[in-house]
Amino acid sequence: MTIVSLKRVSATKGEPLPVEVAFEKGSNYQRVQIEVYDAGVVNPISRLGFGTDPKIKNGVFEVDIDTNYLDLGIFEVKMVRFHSPKEPTILPQVDLISGKDYERMFFEIIDKEQEPHTQAELRKKILNIEYHLEQEFLKPVDIRSSKDAQLKNCCVFVFVHNLLIGTRIRFDHFEMIPTNSGLGAKDQIDLVNEFFKNNSSVRLNFPYSNELRNSSQRSNPAFVLHFPEVIGSNYDEINKYCIDKAVLLLLAAALSRDSSGEIFGIVLLDRISGKAMHYPISNPYIGNLLVGNLSGESPRQLETYLAGLQTKPINQFFARLFKEARREKNTDFQYVRYWQILETLAESRNYDSSKPLLDYEGEPLKNDSQLRYVRGSVNIVFNLLRESQIGNTKDSWENVNVWFAFRNSVAHQGSVSRYTELSQDRSKVWAKYGLGEIQRLGGHDRYLWELKEDVKLLIMRELVLNRG
Picture: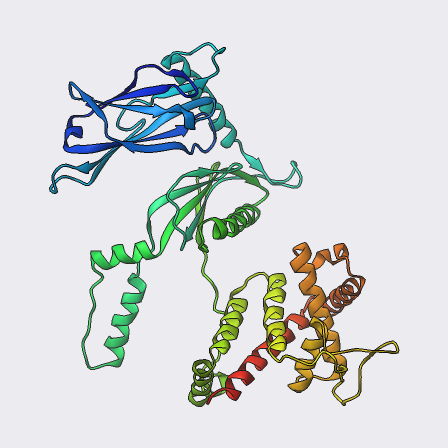
């Protein structure tokens, strides 16, 4: 039986606080590590972790917590780890977890003027705080615009892969839950086997072994977002609310975890009817749906592009940027991505900024009576299109200015629709004009389509010119 106890549960800052651990197998190890977490908060985190050689008396291991490193408050001895085995045949470490392997143990750091508490008092206080935090977390979120609207009440699970999460973390009425697992590669193995079965006389059949399954799951970890109770007018409204929350969280996780997770499924459990709905989500194919020579499967074309990528490494950078832009789901953000490619391509030309900017007929472009020069983002991109003979003076000048205005709206304000908050009047005017054109065309964003096509054409020309 494992027993973790404290000789006293109250200490002033700087006083050592002894922890005693009675663990039968502890004698097999040389060192003990203690993890101290804060208590009575939504997401407890480690506040102190240290390893040391324990004092041993009558089979009980004693370690002193150095309270100099802790602030005033209540803490929990969350984990005791025995490690550094005395024999090579012994497990490298044994972890003892609070609430699982031993009774939860709390202590407090107090001012000298404060009255100390007993273990029972601290436990009662923390359990009461945790109860109220749990009740607050479980409160339903009503997202209906009108409380008179029809009601659907769901518990929602959003499944995410390609992001490793090892800690359960709670937010405002939803939480991240680790799965300690991931997605396997069975579909890939099945496709490989099916290909050789149908296209080769060689009869190959690669097994989907436990080793391969475990390896592929580690390479593609998954976790779950749990929304305890969401009330909406319909399932679609609830679905969208949870997806929007998940997308924002994944953006934050991309920064904190240095990885980008993707949603692959959503499960809605109707709390009233008991009905369960599964919504699988996959990234749709966004490329050419045609096949064959006329649709971009030309061997000669691909060989040319491959040579251009290999001959000049900077072309790989442009192609990767284009690939990422094509994968971007947010159309507003696509403007930023495509413009980055355009501007970088134009800057790589090293234009002479003292020369006047010419139109497609070779005449100088003017701003009222003043000459325009080949300098600044709009002008150098226009010059790039003109030199490449893509478009004409009128259309290209309009496109470049609208693209740049939309890009500025997104880069500085977060979306194209917030263009009115820009500081530059010129960008405001062009953004307003561009949005008006899109509205006139029934919502068809010809600017984004032409931006994508022009960027693609410029990159393809770079590859052809540098094919060697």
